[in-house]
Each structure stands twice: as structure tokens, then as C-alpha cells.
Image (tube, rainbow, N blue to C red; front, side, top):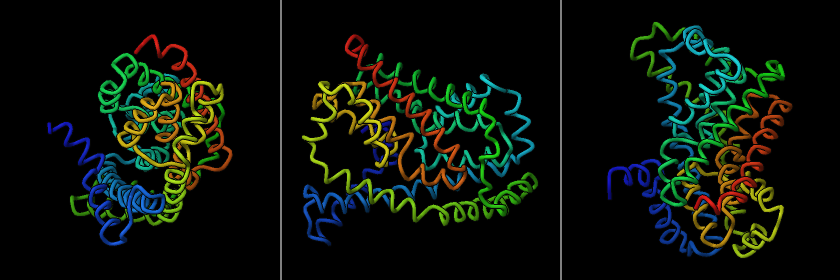
Length: 334
């Protein structure tokens, strides 16, 4: 196994954890993971642990890095770009951060606390989980370079257009204060020593996880039930190319599920090999990575319902348009 494959499978994909969870379900619970109950329990345990590992590690690292960039310093760098250029730079920044949607939200919180424009923050929030350099290579291996490049380009367009639209709607009053303590500590962090930076990162990580852990567990539980109790043949019947609404259905079905881009691509490949059109497959993948239920619940802790609904609406429309476009031109690109 190459270093790249080891990193994507074992570090980011946590295949070791999936294998360990499978052994746990088989040997401790005496359940077959191919059964509905066994599969649901394996999915729930694996995804819950995986999410919290990702959340803990990534939030800690992000918070540590953020300690070097207090609000005024960050604003000075990023507010040089405004409007369309700001949304574009932010979306491009998202492509070099291979985070799932749940782990992108802490960065969004940091951006919001720093007083950055909404367009900048939401362009990053859309782009980061949906497109990145690693997904470009993985998608190319499954669907070819043409499909891969177009997927990334259209994902960036959704992020830029979405951020630009939100910036024009003057919704700054729809942002909620996350935690006053975190914001004050963040503001003082420029002069921290190493011990203070590590303590800051630890406290910020615990504060965020404490606020969202219940909702993550609920979201993963719903995802586990849907993932294992809806028959595959029914999904393929609903998502087949004979149904003109398959892209819309795929976008909606993907929302309650949770997976990062690396966990979603193998599912997308399986659907594609089963005969589901490429646009429908990619719409499902975009929906899972950008609009997963756990991440939307987390986001609701930071933004008010009106802005959350607008964000979901813009991203959903972008995903649906992308799906139909791929269904139309995808066969010519394969």
C-alpha cells in the first residue's frame, strides 16, 4: 500500500476503526454486520467515534493555529478581498482543507468571531467539505479526470455564488454568538506562550464538543437507521435514470446521512456501478458532504433559522443544478 493510500484509508478514512468496530459487533454483540441490526450498530459506533475523533483532533489543531491569528490580525489579511473576490479566495482556501462539514464549522465560527464578511465565511463553509485536492484525485480514479475536474469547478462555483448571494442579503444580524468565553480568549491569544496556546486549544475543543455532542449522536443514529433499513433495490429504483426527479430525491436522501468526502466516494462508486446516473450520484455525494444533518444541527447553534434556511436553500439549488448538468453531459465526458 502506498503512503497516499495508507493516509487516505487509515488516517482520514479510519479503516482501522471500521475493522475494529466490525470485530466488536461480531465478537461482543454476536451480530452479523450484514444484518440490518448488526449493520446499524456497526455504523452507529464507527461513525460516532470517527466524528468525535475528527472533531477533537481537528478543532484542537485549528484552535491552536487560530491562537496565532486574533480577530484584528485575521481581518486585516482577509478583508483585503471583498465581494466576489473575497468569496472566491475563501472558496479556494476551502479546497486545501480536507475537512468534513462538521469540522469546517469551527473554522466558520472563528471567521465569524473575527468579524469577517458573511460571504467569505459561507463560501468557505460550502467549499471546504465538498471539494478538496484529495477528492480531485480520488474522483479521477473512479470516474475519470474530466468528471473529477468538472466536479471541483462546479463545487467552487456553488461556493462562490452562494457566498456572494448571502453577502448581498445583509443578514449579519442572523449570526448568533457562540460562546463569549471562547471569543474573549481568542481575542487575547496573540501574546500567548506555548502553554497558553495549548490550554486555549483544549478549552475551545471541549467547549465546542460539549455544545454539539448530543446533536451529533442523534444525527448519526438517524443516518444509521436510514443507511441500513432502506432496501438497496428500492434506492436504485428511486434513483434510476427513468425517474426525472432522481437528482432532487438524491439530494434530499443524502442530508440525514453523515460522511466526509473520503467515506462518500466509495458509496458514490457503488451507486454508479449499480446503474445510477453520474449526476444523481454526485448530487447525493454533494448533499451528504455539504448538508449532513449533524453539521446542520451544529450550524444552527451559530446562525439563526432564517439564515440557516437560506444557506440550505442556496446549496440545495446549486447541487440540483449540478446533478442535472452532469446527467446531461456526463456520458460525453466518461
